Amino acid sequence: MLTTTACGPVDGTIEVVDPGAPGGRPARTRVHIDANERVFAGHFPGFPVFPGVCVVEYAHRGALATLPEPGEHWTLAAVESSRFTSPVFPGDLLSCDITWSRGTGPRQAGAWRCRVAVSTGRGPVALVRLRYARDGGGQREAAVAERTAEAAPAVPEHGTEHRTVITTSEIKQVLPHRYPMLLIDRVTELVPGGRATGLKAVTCNEPWYEGVRDMAAEEDYHYPWTALIESWCHVAGVLVAHDQPNPDVLRGQVMLLGGITDATPLRPAVPGDLVEHRVRLSRQVGETFMFEGESRIGDETALTVGRLVMTMRPAAALTDAVPTGGE
Image 1 (cartoon, rainbow, N blue to C red):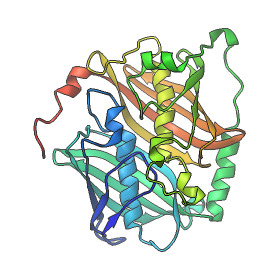
Image 2: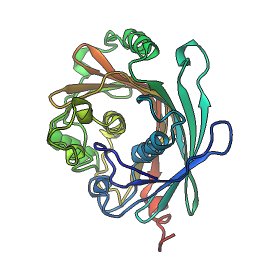
Image 3: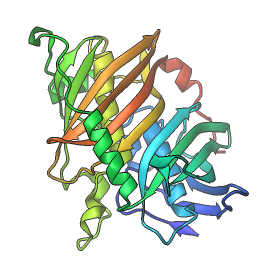
């Protein structure tokens, strides 16, 4: 069985190796990570590491392909957690073992949850937990209202004299990302060691829309949630690296995504939207940074992030891990 998605940041086609059985054996999917995946051109140019959010995207697509109730229209309600343990490179065969269970508690009534163990031929890559809600269900609307209230604009903690505006050209001096993976346009506020706010303008010319047919439905133009999370991460990256920029990933320290917890999509972004990402540094332990925050479109909350972990690692340690041949 094969499945494809019209809009998204990845190009490969998921193969369902085993559909599994709820309460029994896990489902299994796999996909080949081709060197021509478009994200490689802009994610750490010259050093092809597959983005962590794209690993989550393939876990999500594998989940959609093996949902226990495929006849229903299900929506990603939350990335409950994800933890990354090993990099993914071009040529890898990415396997996802997917274990399904019913949601519990009043907020998860009727939902499906899955545990996705992601691996390559070299071993485990990530452990991802996702939750799905039936589209149009009352539980989702209640969660949207609750999260929107929680993410109400906060009173600034510092005076305006501590704020810094960073333009697109300056962002390129801080982050190594380039088209199509440079996903923020401007940082409008930066309080060192505290918080940052950045903007992402969504347009119909985004590369993710290339495969969307002319007569597609409006929902086919919903900006991919994983790409929106990656865009939020870029604001976090600028907050950490603005005073120690490293646009050359082959030297110095490299930013790596360590994990995401409780990332909840609430309102889809579509072409014409201006997304405002708000990032707060909640904790730092050595070269590991923990963030929280949200994304807003106008006066609506589009995304909340309970915690995101980013680590800085020497480039040499990563280049030594690049496989010398195929799996």
